[in-house]
Length: 306
Length: 271
Image (cartoon, rainbow over all chains, first blue to last red; front, side, top):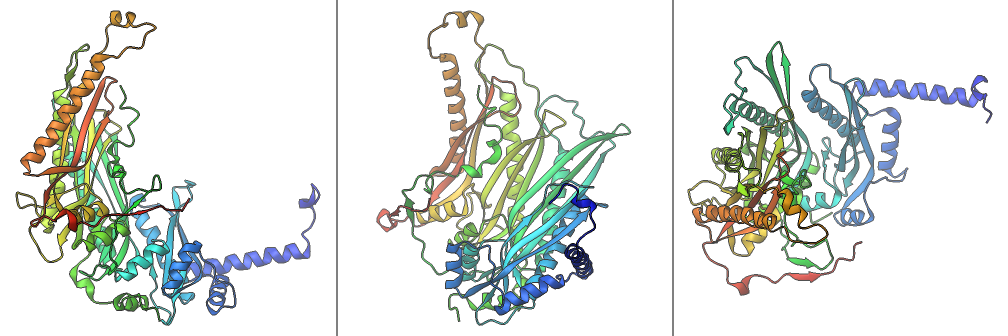
């Protein structure tokens, strides 16, 4: 390879590669507009399902063992992305972006003839470009031996071991639900001004928070309803900002909840007995307390010293 | 055909929706293990309960060279937490919950105003699967507890039930040392007795207050107590001692010690 190679005309192989790439991108573009997997992906998934290509799984060997012992077989890694620009609302964009990515992931799983997608990870590349963000989902499509392919595969954000644990308890993790809400408050009458220097609740801000959180959680329930009958929430994100405009203080409060939806039969705990064990391995003991439940002080422990 | 997967789950994997959704959607912030254990303990989650309070902390006047409790700050921390907790509990009561498991209490400073603190209490409201009301707190409302789902299961199996999340707070000013006293200790290791005694007093006050709350809730004891030291953007000599734990009572029928299974000792060979 010479330093000035880029000045030379492309070789026939290079030309071919460029054309292939252009064709592939045109195909991807056409298919994502219809929320369908690209043709090459489709082909790969179908070959993996029929055994003409090796299966691909994000599972560890231990997870593979558990999955196989329950009659599940990996097909292929499936993924979906939606890169969204927040032209209208940052907060609600999150609900939109994940929802679209979820739809596309399900389409890939369907094309792979899967019953479920396990170990689905929610990913974002922190690029911060043009007030936009990518919403990417990656997981492993699996099928259950003896079951026909599902027209509506479930999407589980939990790893394989937890997926199997849930199945045994007759609980199916089904998808991802998002609850997002934001509100602006204009403080026309100066309700947030503190004239009295004693202890007092800032009720205007408390009320704003209560409203935003409650609405976000209501949205979460609404979004979850189409996928299951409950959620295990794994993320609560909230922010509040103050800004002054025309001598009036404005507050923006936003809240996003991201949760795994489940389809659970009520009153049906799993049948295994639970045995208490004391792990003699350092750090693995269940007796070291519940410190992670008190995050209030995690951030400022250092400041606490006198 | 895999035999371990129950029928209902298998139907769902085939892509068939069941009609169970008529019962409504529950929300929770449980992990998978917590969810399974809370259900194994005979409870069902019904909804995430949140209480918030944005609080303006008043100005505290104190003496520079005196060990003393800063009552304005202590009261502020108490009152604001109380408001957040009671709102969360009110939400749980409105849902008809018998209790709240896994309460997390967080405090944030709002960046535009040093006097504003935001308190958030969040936990999962649960109901007893068979409608047993005996798990409620002494006032008939939902019990509160900062125990995780795992801790909750263990607590019930050791013969106790949670009653109320109890806490005690004391914000304390540790006296500055005079210039002269510093000269006397040059080149020697000495105990700074006034600092030590400040720590003692503040911690004792916090524990006492927590214990008093437990007594008011008619509890037998408090489990999972943690004593934190923290500072919420106050000046260097100001510190908050905060004691928090779950007040417990024996179950209706106390379990005899010999009925409680001994834990099995294992040595994990993973890493």
